Image 1: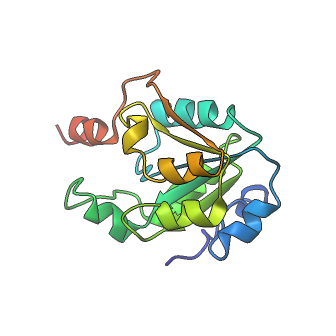
Image 2: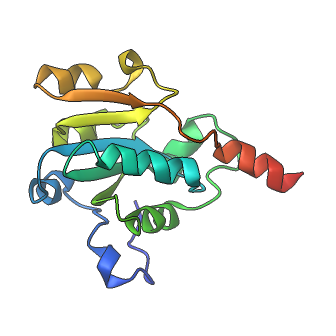
Length: 164
């Protein structure tokens, strides 16, 4: 899918997992929190949301859509703006993030099933009932949260502003 960014400082490189994510996640302290997204242009809303997600557990794993997966999300034909390796590197640099894992499917369900998080989180635009993996996580005794937006920010709006 991709390689680790060559210029990533060693302090962050270990946070990017390209192989077996369940093996890497098994070494993290529990409760394990999982979220996912494109994270194309990281903004204040993303940073705040990820810190809030991490506060729900001891570790935070972020699943990141591959470039092909982002294109299938109907965001725009020229998205993502930043390639997967860059998006993962920026996420790995955040203190709140424990692991960054790419996925190529349209949803992170297989990754959720592999990781078996204790807490599943999405942003406030996702009602709990529509969060992929919610039934599975609650089925094994976990929690599912939809975190309200603290800051109304949007990568799409940022791109439109830059272009105008």
